Length: 409
Image (cartoon, rainbow, N blue to C red; front, side):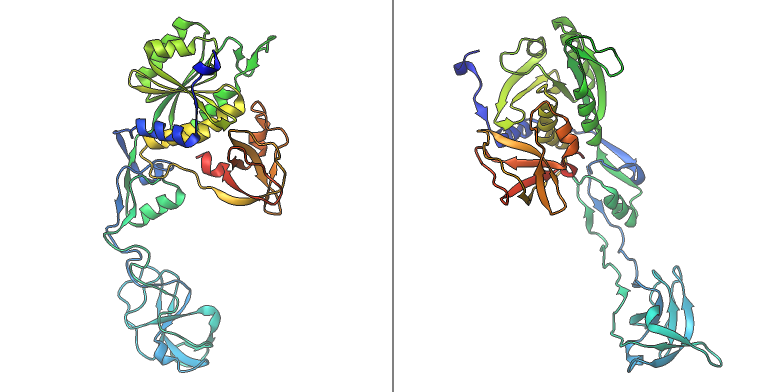
């Protein structure tokens, strides 16, 4: 194909805008027990039916009392009652102290708690007593009713991806079930007679199908239901049949390889025959070729075949699409400004995503081989350095770092 016939390069931002503008969130939802909703995206707000905490309580083991009854450190007060967690309706007697334990409700009339480390028991006749060896201020070590959550407030909004802390927060307001987006169904297959599976003999000219494992793992990490159609025979009829099966079962079809402009294979004509297809050239490295289209009611994304290109393109372009399908509110990963501890004197004209890792000094080290075929770099690294087009890097420069922890879930 001549240079004039090649699609123009488009920026990553332009490609993302087009993808996300085309894809709509799935309409279907699931209702799950809160304990089973980890990693899912909320489809409805979680609104608290109660105050959290539901009553004033102590954040320390110690003694509940009135601050006015402790004129100075060393004051001795009789211990009139014991208040463990779960006791309700205790009433404080002025001029006394109440032994109290973390989480217990503050007795009515008490206005402070003194931690037990600042008190000492005093032996004597009759009631036990305690010497308070600290100054006391009203309100200390008391967690107020509604301090964390107020009744009627939205504690988790629709679009929130549920991590462990979010599940705990939902449980704290009594949410036994949650309404979440249905898992996207993603069909995955590979084409190419040169591909074999690990464990099979590696004949001359053959390669192991690593992309199948990488992409499947990435999809599972994003909460997708993966429909793995394996390796499809390298002919047009078989490829068209695989696309029809995938479209009948999935919301999204993903393949790797066979999408470069001018490449001779059966995938491109098969998608064009069964639906519609655009071939894009994205101004990123690694990456560049991307196919986007539709087969029946399923979206289609064709990724480049080189392992790192497929990995990076998935993280930058497919991940936001999958989050969009789930109705997630946040699609973009967080970037951090960190110091480069290396030189990069010959930048590419495309936006580069370099595999780097953090060192003990808080800077970034560069994997020595940035080839798109070196998957070792993705395992060695802690994330991607987002380097603008044509931007040379000198050791000490501040650069944009995207941790894999932001991209892999």
